[in-house]
Amino acid sequence: MNKIKEFITKDYYNLIIVLLIIVILFLSLKIVIDQGVSYFTTTENRIDFLETSINHTFPATRDEQKEPIIKKVQSNLLGIFFGIDVQDPITYAQVQFPASSLHQNNESVNVASRSGTRKSEFNIREEAEFVFEEFKIESDTNTEKNIENNEESSESGEELVIDSRKNIDLPDVRKPEKINFKADKPQILIYHTHTTESYKPASEGNYHSLREEYNVTTIGRIITEELEKRGFNVIHDTTYHDYPSYGGSYGRSLETAKGILKNNDSIQVVLDVHRDGYNHIDTNPNRDRIIESNRAKINGETTTKFQFVVGPDAENRTQIETFANFITAVGEEMYPGFTKPVLVKPYGRYNLFLTDYTALLELGSNANTIEEAKRSAIYFADVLATSLEILGE
View 1 (tube, rainbow, N blue to C red):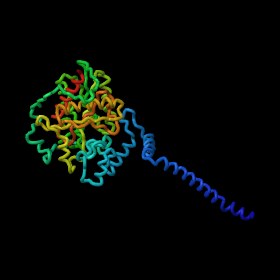
View 2: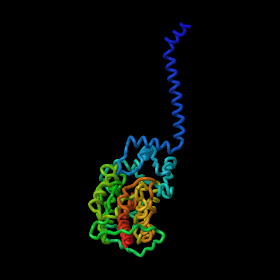
View 3: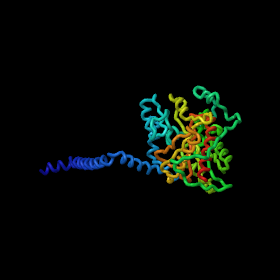
View 4: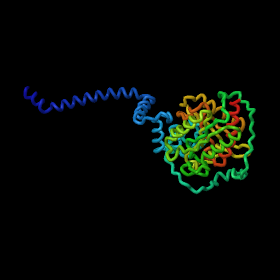
């Protein structure tokens, strides 16, 4: 018996210890897995766990968009490898059926309302570093047809005739609080978070151009000039916030806007002017439909439509959404067909918390020409001026 004990002690002692450790680890792991499976049964818990881990590793700055980093990572990875936008359910179908290419005009609201693929604020294809090269401008004659033969170019020097109507009755539209502007002091700020966003024919950099005559800077300038004709005191900032780096544009534009507001506390209305964007607009099989869906006819002139975007995470969402809906209603009353419904994004603030009369404007898109956008800028300025005059009464 002693020999057997001695044999076991000498030759199998270590093996028994190892086996016991393996059994203990196995049982412990089973308990952990069982608890984990129970916890991660719901999608919410899985996302919360992963989001907490990533946010701990990559903490976001306070003044940037309050968008969970997990959503950015999801969007970027899916966009890179599969061309899928997590905010746009239509893109899942497009991956399987590329010919469909349906455009989701209002993302989660009016799904499959128009053709094309709508951009996402954090879509990797829009976040990429753009190459700003001075390409030769070539006219697109396939579908534009010179924006119809009977249209006149803004270079002709002939100004559009605006027929303003202040007697607007909107009984079913909630009216924002009255605005008390200070005379002879700055009242309105116009700036651009994505200053390089351009219109046709400036297609370089995926429609992001440093040539001001083709990007949203020109649109802001026209709106400013038209508002000043109506007696408003406007500051137009043309700082490039998305060049040379597109990422972090909102953080940089926020600092610019805050600085201007700090030195001009009389400003109450803030307008961030953008243009909407479609990925692969020039090769989209439904390109003609996209172009027409973004056009409007006013006084016989072809223009673009306009739309306001609201970030639901803004602290003053109620006020900014009311302001956007009111101007949209005024615009549709003055010029039927000129507007698109206010678009409320799934998340984000978009610097709309600056004042209760701050708005993110998308005037036309990269499916429109700069001439169409210029005409729209004049009519939009008329709509905005009329809206502010009503709120100042």
